[in-house]
Length: 634
Image (cartoon, rainbow, N blue to C red; front, side, top):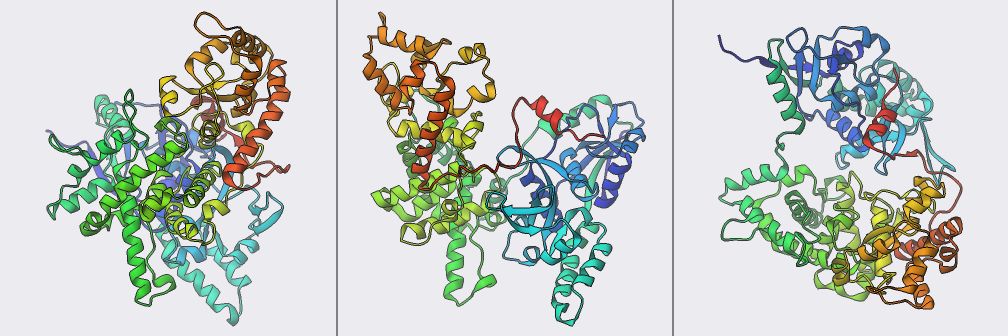
């Protein structure tokens, strides 16, 4: 008799995590070991704390014809490995592993920061912020170093000490590791805050327990259970679908469905049709070079556009509330988060769509002025949204010299502060409010005031994915760097015509022969923008050799006067004397100082050159080696 081989049931989250702890719920061994980054863990905690859905899990009952080798979730005790699992988790590994480690394991969690640093974190909920409806819940989730002490001023000043329960009680910071067992913590809390004069504080915790902690206790997760009769073919197809197939519904699709009820075709606006070029195509074609498939803003997505429109709409609502005499928490937030997109009325979309589109087009022009021409070289895709909304807000005034200079400074602070790597929704909203006010004489926006660039960061920039790495390349071209061979500056025409990219100054092959480690010679300090043809001439020989080759010339390349070639080198902030003598160490030290001055000029503030090292280790290497390092020992 035909029938379904699965059923869907809700399970208590606490019970599922206990199953992971005991080994009753394990992973099929072919699933990769992995650890979520810090920001996604915070987002997951925030969702559960508000009783928001985090998605269904999919499991396969053990004992059927599909006999995968099991292994416990990361961090489970040794006893779990000896247990025979009742079921295997096909979908939801990262969510369950993260929740297990932060709530039930009672040990520090290994994770990765937005700057790609491996760190160890304890997670806390700021009780006051969690109860403040005007504060985004994710902002109330705090990652704390392994010693549970939060410091500023490069480790010199202690802000909050949570290394003891008394410190937690005093700061009203609740450990996520105890969300399922709060009685003992509450006993200590009540004891520390005893007395009638502290009744308000004790009531605050009781409210927190009702509104936040009980959401963990009663949280239920839908689980799609494939029974043991499921065939191998079906399991393989299901696993492939849930891991790589299909794109889940996003805000754009949901808004499209809502607008369709009012007769508006949002999808047509974006994608167009046979007779109309949609907004997506217009963005792709904006400042698109003749021999390129896409312009600099081709990566702007449909939700990015809706987010920008939402910022204008929510700001208008806030202004209306202010005019009505509302204050403080009564004022609606200016935001472009997912909920704001889902609440965006069709009338508001129509009101702001043309203004916002023009902002994105002008943002492309702004980026070209900074010598950022390709999406590949764009430091942060996410920073285009606040850039476009600010420009859309102030109109043609962005082209005035004083305003443009401030915009440029704001942009580079975002890049070199590495502030747009993750969890950017609140920063985008702040920039939208703060930057226009700054242009009118107000205080510096937080993106500018919060940025601190470390001098030693230059040595660790080795990956093309680094925003600051890409930023230095653009700054060098903006400052007038000239190609070693042709002497041409890298304007738009030369950049694409000569196939310009970032290349080593001391070639890799030479560095390897000299015993210099990749971690050193692959730094941005040893790289600069050069044309493809010039890089071919450089090859893998010592700088003294390729400079002599350039000076001598050949049938295809005229000879270059040594003094003129020295000028080309200086335009890249390279000291000709150290390069000509192949003095790698002296070159690296001098160019680090010169690049640092370039960054300081762009951000308008001095870099930090102290001796306090940045927290964490650099995550380098391929994914397999990183995975091996991040696997929790059992």
